[in-house]
Length: 69
Image (cartoon, rainbow, N blue to C red; front, side):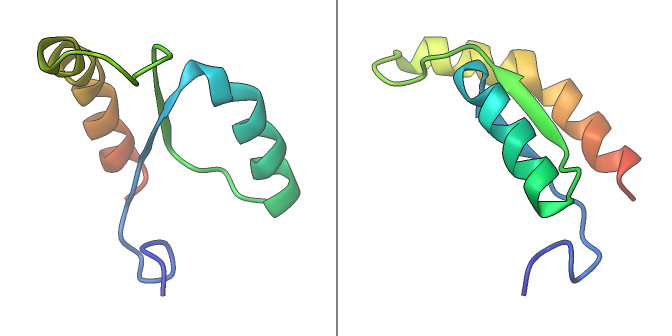
């Protein structure tokens, strides 16, 4: 069972490289997911760089979770 089926809010964190793919899949599935985009790529980033990406995304992620209630 998914979080959505249980009525629990969720948010996906996706890199900008996959923005078009998210749009296509969302339309195909008839689903409007909460998405927060971060800069691509995340592979080979240092711990400090990943922390900075997370710091930059956390407010949007929290806002998305609260608005989907």
